[in-house]
Image (cartoon, rainbow over the protein chains, first blue to last red):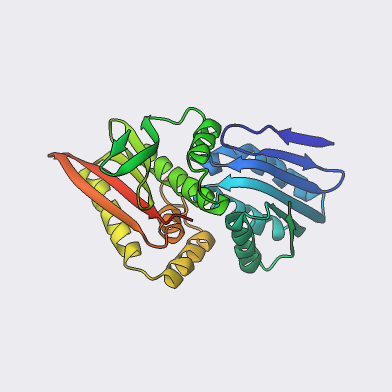
Length: 118
Length: 160
């Protein structure tokens, strides 16, 4: 069963795919207050992780602000402490910013990142 | 419309961004002469600065201009109370004097810190802008009256 948080002007579409143990983030992520914006998502993820041992996060983001960068980093760390986590990091081939941010997260978290150029 | 020898490519004035998708797409279109990675850097910095300006303004409109002269110049203006502008000045002075390698390290530490600054901030917005502009960033503060200052962040990006 999938749960979808629809994209808005400043937040991505977030699709929780329970069958394939995957969460996909697509679009832009520039809310002024990400903690407040993603409170409901955090609750869903807490429930989800109770029944999972493995999870994949897939990110296909075009822009994210520094507040969201911190939120995503905290999310990755929190989930990695609860499940076996892997990350798919999608970026446009000429987008150095998104690629480098992914590399930074990979280095800081020590998690396996798969980088996919589109 | 031109200012001095600069041509204004994009201008915004207001107290909120009604549509970020339009905002980003209009800036991107205005900067099409630049390669994509440069356009992205400018847009990312603009979003950071404008969101900070909208968050911390005390009154009046926030203004943004992106102009083209020898370089691409981004200016963001907001009004601020004296206490907030002093805090900002101290913060900016500290990071402006810091070398690039150390700034990257500070950015990592902020990311990893359990502290959340201000309103869900990481404290990395200005650091990001300084890094993206390769340290071509200035903070100008002008007193408006006894209780208010005008804050102006100015960033220059080289043509690429």
